[in-house]
Length: 180
Image (cartoon, rainbow, N blue to C red):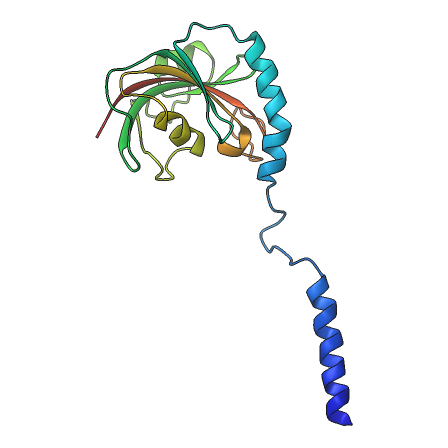
């Protein structure tokens, strides 16, 4: 009888805990799909008024939009290629918030005396740049000039950065200088 009571008690106890949602010790889980769904119409509306010369507009399945201004004659980078580029990062309202070029940083009041301004290099898919960069550069050839419209999911998500509010859709004007 005592054994049966223990089995019933254990079953009830296990059932109660099985019905509860697991607790994430790192805080709430970021809603990737929800944010992509929320930002898609914002990006579409922006694109209707964003008039720039382009030779191609690529809507990547991940939600990143690649607007190619000048098509390079080099190859497209493969996974883990070392990519060299210049970039200017803007908010949707056109405010410059980051760049690897010192003259652009000075002209837009985002210059940081502790930063080394030089050609930016990152490993495609290597995690040393935002995912939106890897998504964008996979779609263009070396030598290209392009603009990437990157949903917050593939940028800084809900993290605030200097000059960049949380959940910001970002515009990257890039010049693909080469790769190894």
